[in-house]
Image 1: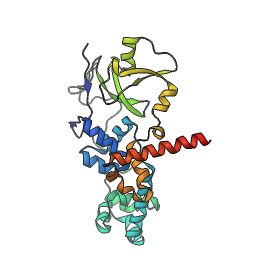
Image 2: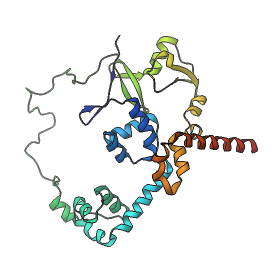
Image 3: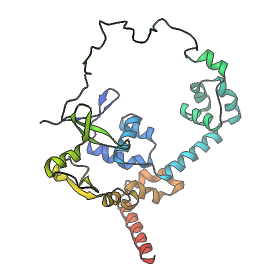
Image 4: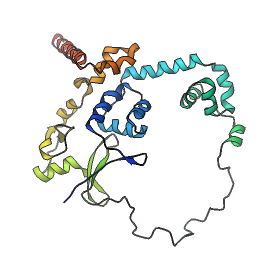
Length: 286
């Protein structure tokens, strides 16, 4: 049976994630705003968030602190009383041009101060359906208005996949992984399916882990580990990724220096060894 990998689409085109894109994404995501990273890599914000979920990445605490500090900077830079007066009857686009901030910043600022649009202004300036109005294209439930062009019973969409197709899907709604279709409407995790095909049943309390995520999933790249070992393997505090170590070096007040620190792997490795040594000393003393 032939198996193929269906790549995800973005803005009407297929994204082919190269090894370099994955490395850059893992390095920059924890210390870069998602919209800036998406623009830099030429992808959508949704694709960036989806990829971060797939790799299990999170924003570092210093970046969240900087986001809140940035919000305070916006409030101090504009005339807040004038903004409160104009917001109920002015579009975000006009406010953004007037105060020199983004439209999303206008919306965040209004939400944080509990500002609302004027109902009369909304009625005259927003294109919304008015309550109680009927429209000519409405019809009764179950009524067939175009039988010649309607989908017939048994029709399948063009993107319907076949048994043996492999594609990326969410695992329990959190991270993304490869799944294989074994029947109509039935998908199973590809790594588990591959292990069962070659090694048989998976014992209770064990999971199938990928030895090297950068390589293709084959039976040689899979191993069986306990759930305890899997928890320790995925612990970010134990593994200390480059982005987290760089944030420790920069500190809360200099988060903007993290991209520059990431260019010096020898400095990051030195700091990582220092943190590990400190943890070892603390464990021995306790």
